[in-house]
Image (cartoon, rainbow, N blue to C red; front, top):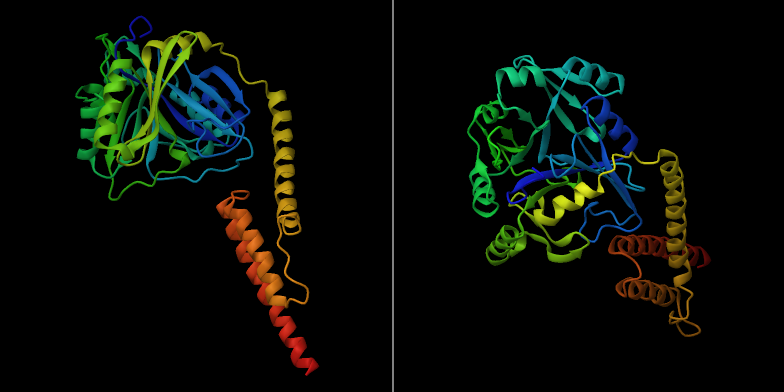
Length: 398
C-alpha cells in the first residue's frame, strides 16, 4: 500500500478505553497485535479526536504493520474518564488470528469471556476491554476455506447497525466512493441476509482491504462516545470533492469543517463529517497522511511508570479544579459584582438579590449550563426551606 497512495482505503477505527494497559495487553495477547505509536496530549483535541471529553488524553495506535500499509485501532484514553456510555451502533470487529485456541485461552486468562460459534468453524467471540466485541477468526481455516489471496489484512471488517441500509449504501458509495463487495471474503462476513459489505478495492489483485459490514436494524442506532470514529485515507482531490458534495447537499453532516494544514511532510487536508446514522468519519488526505504515520511509527509502548504518575497527577488536578469551581460558587455571592439590597430589606428581597447575582454570573459564562442548573435548583430548594422555617417561627412568635 505504501508504494501507491492514489487510492482510497479505510485507515483505522477510533475506540475508547478506561484502562489503556488492559487494552494493550488484550490486543497483544488475544489479537496478536502491537503498539505502533503512542502520544500524550495535555489539551483536548480541537477536532474532538478524543470525543467530547474536555481533558488531557492519550492516543495509542495498535495494529500489525505501519498505518500506511494496514488497518489499525486508534485507542483514546481520557484522563479522569472511567466509563463511556455504550450505544447500539458499533457491533463488532472481525479479527483474524494465527492460533484461535491460543487467543481463546489468553482472553479467558485476562478475564474476558469467549464463546465459540456453534455453527461457524474456526470462529469465536470475545467481549474485550470496555465491552468492545471482537469476532476472532482462525487464519488457517479462513485462508483455506474462504480467501486464496496471498496477503491478508488481520482486520477483516467492522460491523455496524444502521437505520436504513439503502440510505447508508447510497451515502458511502455515491459520496465516499465505496463499493458493494461481492466475493468469497464478503460472503463470509455477510452470512445473514440482512447484512451487506462495503469497502474499497486495492490496486493489488491479491489483496483484500478492511470492509464495513452494515446490518439493517429494527430501529435507528444510538450513537455514543463508545462508537468512536472511522478514519478514511483518501487522495486530496477526492476528499475535497466529497466534502463539497456534503457541504452543498447535507451541511448538517459536517462535524468539523475542512482544514488545510502545512505539515512537515506536505499539505494535509482533514475534515470530520458523519453519515445519516451519526457515525463520525475522519477524511484525511492520503498523500501526506500515509507518509506522516509511517514516519511516526516507533513501535514503542507507553512508559507505564510515567503514565501511572500522570494519572495520579491528573486526578489531583481535577480535584483542585473542582474545589476552585466550588470556591467560585461560594465566593461569587460576596464578590464586588454583587449588588447588595438596601438596609432593612426583607428575607425574600435579600434572597432574590443573591439569586440574580448567581444567575448573571452563569449567563456571563463563568459556569457551564449544567453547573448553573445545579446552582439554581439548589438555591431555590434551600430558599424555600428557609422561608418555611421563618414562617413557622413567625407563627410560634404570634
